[in-house]
Length: 374
Image 1: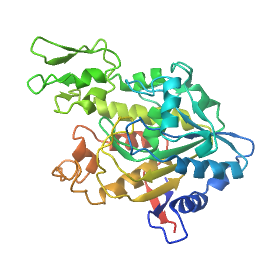
Image 2 (image 1 turned 135 degrees about the vertical axis):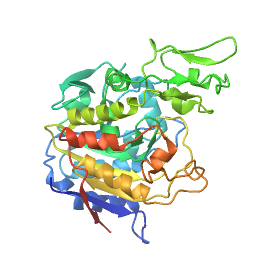
Image 3 (image 1 turned 90 degrees about the vertical axis):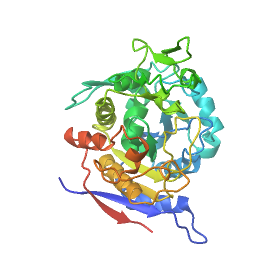
């Protein structure tokens, strides 16, 4: 397969220029104007950010993208689907309030927000996935599938189950309804190392399914009949007492994310933009954001989400670790994987499985030509 073109620009701005102007030039150079937007509904998939998190993308980026689409005759809207875990984005009312609190309003972006899987996360469509190994049918938020064109606007960061989150994570997991998210997560169930557990009960506060209980010694245990395998407890435990002992589970989750991404993108024009700034070690679904693990790098864009994710991953792995971050605290030279910053942060994960499976099912290529835009 021919190498995909991935365009990028750095974060440097001369006096009189701005990063938003550079972004506009970048997406034009990357070919967004080749898409026929005329009177088309355009889903711009974003992550509105969990309140308390400050690493999510500022709404200014979304406004720049939507302004470009409107100039080209399109009818854009910003979309996300409800979450599976406890938080402030698990139903449409709370989700909209969270988006507004984080600055995503029609006054700031010039477009409307739509919670694509409806009030309770049940408004979805079953979409067949060609060539799928795990998900023959994906459950996608209805408003996403009703759109004529899909644009992903992504914040690249770490993830405790998927290793990292880029375009595929934003599209695949992000466009799945609550039932779809459950289907993606249900292969592996975490376990508690009771000798390490401190009984602080933080994990139970973030379990949406009441699957965590405590014995007389205040040690946690997880009821696998109730647990959906979302991994939220793993990321919230301050003492690393919870882990997923089904080592294939994260790989299967990554494969399912790729398959859900294919369900969303197949048969429709699509384009992808990723911002690499404030690269937090955990997802923007967390109600906090740890210190960035590498310096800000730039903005990347292109038509191939697999190549885009690979280019972003390579750029981050080539960047130095910030000494004061969680990455800087760890030895980042794994013998099995080489230098992979996200594996250093989450050793039980390998995000490359997401990209290799995406290639396997025909979603795109990870081979790319990197082109800089000033």
